[in-house]
Image 1 (cartoon, one colour):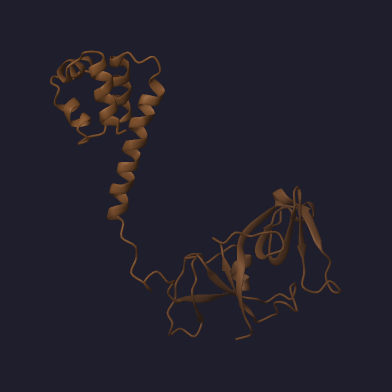
Image 2 (cartoon, rainbow, N blue to C red):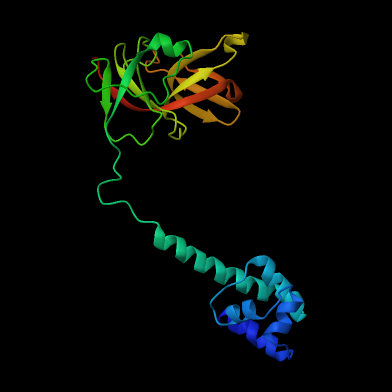
Length: 229
């Protein structure tokens, strides 16, 4: 049953005219009540509550929810009909030229988030299909992740991508070895609740470093690597 028909049934049971019910909810005529009962209009929540109280319903909740559900369905259909899907092939991420920044500038905290370069610039790489507009590229000058990532390699970091335990990420370590010094590095990060392990590329050369998780800030996920330029 439509809400309008339900309202009409409850009104007629109480011997009220449309105008009389309208006056009970603060209306000057019964026109709005007539529009509701005919299905032309569905009342908002506040009006549905006033109607329930004016009718003296013992349990107002089902009556009010009936109006809310019906109004929501109509509004959803109205909005859906006006939201056009993108044309086929138009929603694919476009190639984006990213300036390759030196590792030294990243260590200093200068993250080139959202920067776009020119495809004609030899210091840029063209990233295909990136869904993160804040992605940036950096040239590695440390061998902490060798042989996975070596000096001269270029990695693409996506700040907007979720980093799961075991992913390779760009991280900032705060208060390293009991100091106020911050260090930025690329590592495979393993999250263990209160602790985070940063695993290097070559365990024979470097050791796993473990820090309190609150000392680790994840700056982005490594989503691509290009071998030496």
